[in-house]
Image (tube, rainbow, N blue to C red):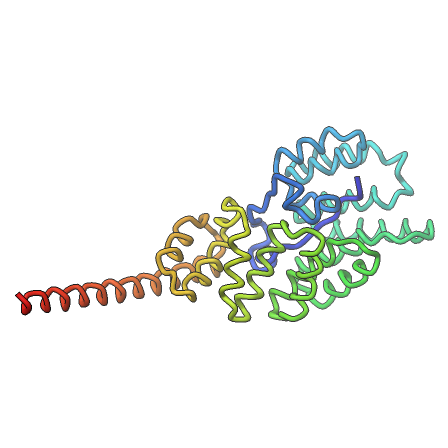
Length: 295
């Protein structure tokens, strides 16, 4: 298995630092980053990884399950054999990052790079992860710089992270280019499909956006950050009942911006449904009156 690295997701940046979206993916076929990052692994996938013969991977998988103390303890047991292993320091940094200890995470990611440099090697995973630290600190230009440097070494995750960053700041054409590249690698990835649907939504191409949303499995379509955008697209296509259902099926959210958007959209949908009902009632009344005169 490749060295596990970290990734960003659209609303992870805008929400509070201790809040995470429910983004777990059960199957590798829906996960373009399955060989590079465990951040979207479901609990069952993480439990399988925990049984890995590689003690470093097994240890860091515990951190992904929020067992930070146990994961770090297991990693520290392997210090003697891994002192000159850049992946080792990267894994320790990952545990601290997942525990929101960003200063420590940054220190160990940089130590990973230094260790690799001393061995005259590159280690793009640590570059990517330093970008994630900068992203958490809202140093967006610095984050983008790290992702761009890491991307040059051929790993996929920095492309994914740049895509989320471009989407957040409305750089649609740059986002489109990256989304298409990722789609060519895995057209079933949930968040790539979401990105493409969002891009077409922002373009005003609601029919194409709807097609991408409909390719997303329902259990993901109900995710808090997806259901709202899907409802907007349905609303724009005047599919008001479907839009209402998409909102109703959407998972509860603690993210204020999504909550407010849903509330406003729900009111707009109800107004449109009320107008449609009034129009239908008026037509029925008119038809009824004509029938009465005819008799």
